Length: 272
Image (cartoon, rainbow, N blue to C red; front, side):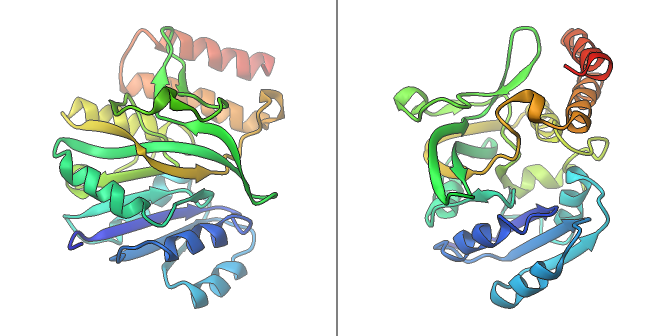
């Protein structure tokens, strides 16, 4: 395949998952034009230096600048206006034919900025699949809350049809470079430190006429870091997520901002 393929992985204390992520990338049946790992303020980076001796990647070290800024930093290193770029979380694992299949689907869908598929759960501690869905795209409730479609459900035939998505989970985005370069180096909005930056990008792309394609033939595995029970999620992270929802609706004006303000007040004031 002649299409240049670039991968950007942002890490932050990811020593328990990144080696497995890179092992899966090494098995891909495509040539990678570049593989860039941006470490955003990890406590220990010695494992990255050891990994780089086994799997060659460009390593960028920075302070903890946040997910959006770190991805943008990696994107600026590509220096190409064409091809495909994958934004990949270090806790996401790709079957060996995933990239080839995803690029073919992207080529076949000329109006698509991003193609996506099923993300299924994976328990990295036990080294096995969970059998549950992690995400089949991000949708919005009638009152404004964004959610991962199918999250926690058993993998079944329910989501085995192609579709156009409102938004794509940022753990794995297979993107057309042409769509990303129109924003210069600011692919992700750096006002978002963590969470909702994937939704904001998707809203921007759809506003600018691009489509987000879901194809169930694409299946990957994600060791989502958030706990199933909301109260086990650190309050600081819940506050960031709630605040970013308000920022999202300020940037993309909508009556849904009422829901976002209520959520932020509940999380900040009552720690719900």
